[in-house]
Length: 357
Image (cartoon, rainbow, N blue to C red; front, side, top):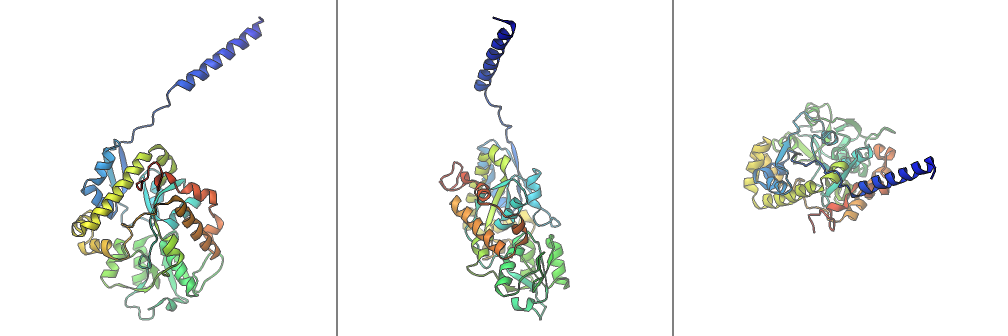
């Protein structure tokens, strides 16, 4: 055998040996997850105090659960940035802004989606002592301010369109001026000072509940009863970065089990839950109880069990908003394949990590 042929034979044997060794070598073990950061929310405060988070995460070796408070000065939607940089593991947003984050390039997946919303969740608000604005019809030519990537845009967008008073867009002026303000405290200050004429808010959120219960604001309009916001865009979602979900699906599962357990406990123990939420989120107890019992509440909704229904929901509301001139979704519409990929079926009924099985 020639030198070249002998070398070729040796190279072939060596390559085969390396391939065999690689095939039988165990895959590198993933780094153990021993701590996790979650949003400080009314239900997570209760879950931590009652031990539900600890019990579920202990089962998978996560020994430390940190609840991260957003702070009153934080921008609406800052949880997406925290998610992207690892500051929190799982984020809560209504599904419309979650979809916008996805369309803007956030590589996240939805692991939980709520049942349909209702007309009470995100009312249009005006200053209580503004006698000139008492209904949606009174907003023609007036200035409406809210966070653009939120239900505070999505809900009034539909309500005003139905009333024939569309909001401004980048493409054309509407019959209601629109000012994007991403800080809730700034929005409230603008409303109370008269810098804007109206806004929209989840009434069960701390700052909105405080304004409403103190009589500072009044409700002048609501989402259509059977509209696209109520049925689709206004649903609550939980989403997480794809890499985290793929590496630690059992952590997401533990989170979702604790979520279901806590909601059930709160419904059966409203007074004690109100006390825990008041202390943990630093609000008066009447606001904490309002957040649980008012029809506008969204922390404690039941889940959508079917992954395909969740996907269909996103398809439908995206199509409606695009048709109505939603400039962000017109520019960055998710394809059907992207929407299918966005909803992680492993956490819905029939999935490996579902809480519904």
